[in-house]
Length: 279
Image 1 (cartoon, rainbow, N blue to C red):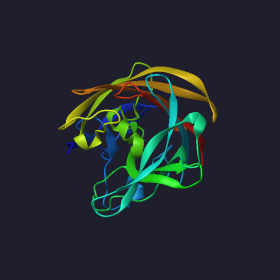
Image 2 (image 1 turned 180 degrees about the vertical axis):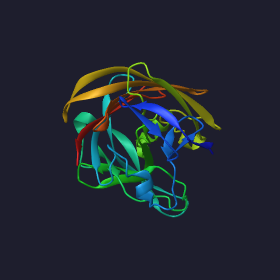
Image 3 (image 1 turned 90 degrees about the vertical axis):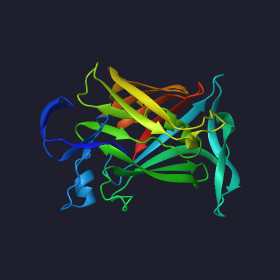
């Protein structure tokens, strides 16, 4: 459990503007700043009312691909059903060459921003609810997961997709940008990760590990995208632990959020996600 500290007063240059922060924020032991829950307000008033990018009701549709160490590109598709100890089945996944897609190929990932607290049994939960849907070419859903994001004028931090194959991204730096948005800004973070995230398809280990992350805004440039030319801040992030290292190069636009994510995985492969449209 991370230590939470209450912010009494901070002067912070945010997105080029100096703003005074009062008692409406909390900060964890690693510096991620979230909203302080006011019991006199609704969950959405507390957590979502100041969101600019990740607004409840919006959908962010991403394309993606996986590239192995040989340079071959793949998507994932529905695999065999696996019987769980509780008696139900879940669909496993397998790779499929990008040139050989079938109707059960996952060809897009949808980040849906939700209203309300997805974990009502945790009243102090202060993250915006987001869901990831893994949609196949036939329109069916391979999987869906609900998790959280933090967005305010101090920082934007989101859980990556982590269903099916994308569990591998638990070992990479999470998408995270911290004010002020200027080249040279650096920050750190860390996260403990259990052995339940290990998989023989990339790496197995025993016991808990701790990822230590470093982030730096290294550039600002216009990039070409399916949304047009976008002004982006480029964040270079690295993670290290006793089992090895991973990387993330992320492209952050103040209007559309994280528009491109270039992951270097624990096994030397890469995973690329790119925002195609927003609904």
